[in-house]
Image 1 (tube, rainbow, N blue to C red):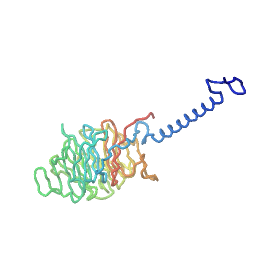
Image 2: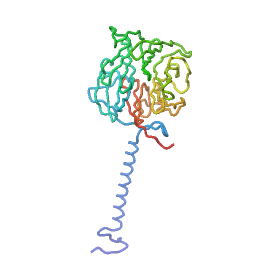
Image 3: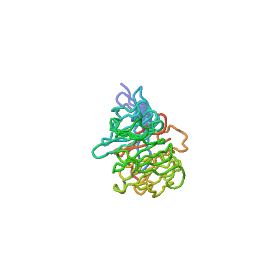
Image 4: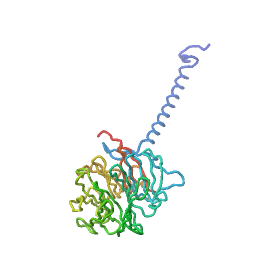
Length: 349
């Protein structure tokens, strides 16, 4: 029987106090180390966020990854349809890859847009939905398709004319947009710097523009948008005048109204959602404007950043779209597209 004395320590069960403290200390130390490791892992796994306040977005890691044997090319365009399916257009053999909003591949098609495709636009016309593509030379076309890629109308460099094939001497068109009345607007950002307007059936109505820095002249009129945020019956036409570092705004009959400079650096194109205008800017960021064209947020500014692969910055945003949940999808003008989804995660201001 073990003697109980202070010199030898009291017994806890068959364990002396010294043994108890030693073992307890080791256990506490172990828990502390485990806690540190857990905190370290938590820190490691902290979500990548861009923006602040209401305009905070969280990177959805791994969204839109392709299986072995498929790859992205230069990031051209991205749109969502009425069911939040995401259409990603890059210069690759699978030129158009369609995902559900969770990142599952549904289908791919569009090999004819693999080499010289550029712009992509989604349009809801009555109960139906359509896609519009622009192709650079030697294609030089605007192509309207249904959501499965079936061609419905081609304007531009067509082999022969018909009711659905309209000859027109495009010079490297870069973007297209559709008005509520069906008018088709096209900008030739890599060519003549002209803006063209057509009827819904492809009949030419009007042309303005040309190279320069004056109002209604352009230096890479890269993107175009029919803006209905303030008045759907009297939309305005926004032009991303990229190398002039400005936005130009026109009436629907292409009369100059105003120029916006300072809000953007090298704007590429536009997307509107719930009264806000989203502008992917080739110079490392995304800008969001309110309905009065005041800056609400400028996201992921990567200008001057040392780490080109930092997931929290942009390098060359070329196109974006926003789904019905407010989540944002961005492709960049890189030869691997750098497709990313950012979930809208508003934070307290």
